[in-house]
Image (cartoon, rainbow, N blue to C red; front, side, top):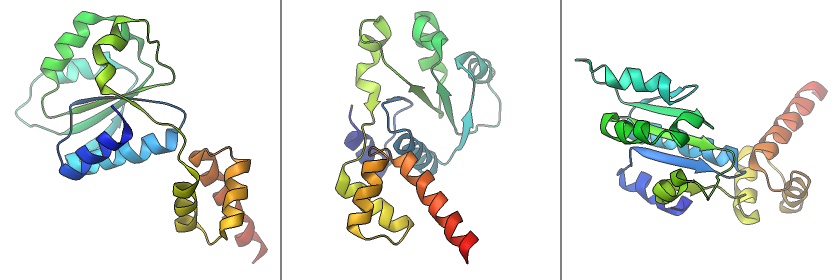
Length: 172
């Protein structure tokens, strides 16, 4: 799956229950997580691993809550096939987003869930210029310099913009 497919799902308000986000553009992942939670109508819960939410999902309650569970590099869900199959049955109205730093394409987990993996590459220059100019007033040439210095990493660009703002505030 690619980022455009997720964007289309968000626009159509037809979300999946399970996503795997990977790639270097962590700020892009964060933007999509927030959009998914907004459309889903649930709160975002960052958890340490699948075992934390497995017990919550297993205990059914009369109060149904829509949550977007986000976990990073959880080995339990990657290695335990039984847990994977049970989890799909228990998700209910919730959404689980697994953030992976790297994906090993040789393991069964990848082969089983390759259609749920969304690769977030660095944004292209035109899109970054648009995003930068939303945040701060910079000329296109200065935006390009900022993009080059930050190696097209939107998260780093936002951190540098924060430094610029703080510097301007300190000088005025």
